[in-house]
Length: 218
Image (cartoon, rainbow, N blue to C red):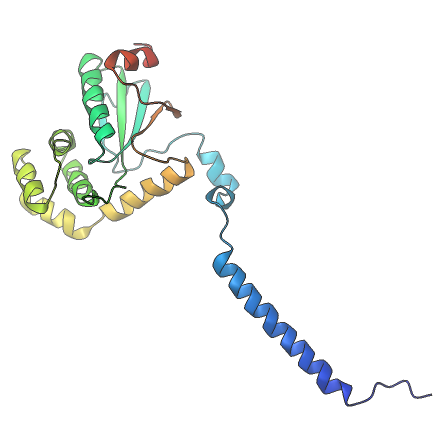
């Protein structure tokens, strides 16, 4: 009895195998393009461990006493009205308790309407490079419609070196710095500005200096 398969079935078998491989390749490509997992699922165990504390990056401005035992981390946007309010409260807090707290400023330029805030943050980044961030910050928070001319005027008012400023803006190192803070914000599940952390724990932004003092035990 002949147990061999008919020879005419071999080309059909090969064709089916090739068609199957092509179909699998198409589906895999489609899946990679559209099957995007939530951010939380993309976080590695190492990244999750790092989030037990908030890293301080090289170009993060530090306000108050750098050696203070209480650390406040603020993610802020210069054009955010609530951030402006918090800036006023934190200025008063530092004035009253200059040795007790330090504030780590995290640039978080997320607003794009009616004006994009990234340019003003770029000037702030360059002001920090010249150790004049605090003066620039307070002036910048008074702006409602920032543009290059207004920012240049503020730069002159806080005595920024014009040549160094232009070099800093041209190098655009601030882009990498802002992106690092935005990645960190996503990992911390920050949804809006201001986002405030005290000793690595996120808190609801206090509405008065007294609330701040109570929250910090001052």
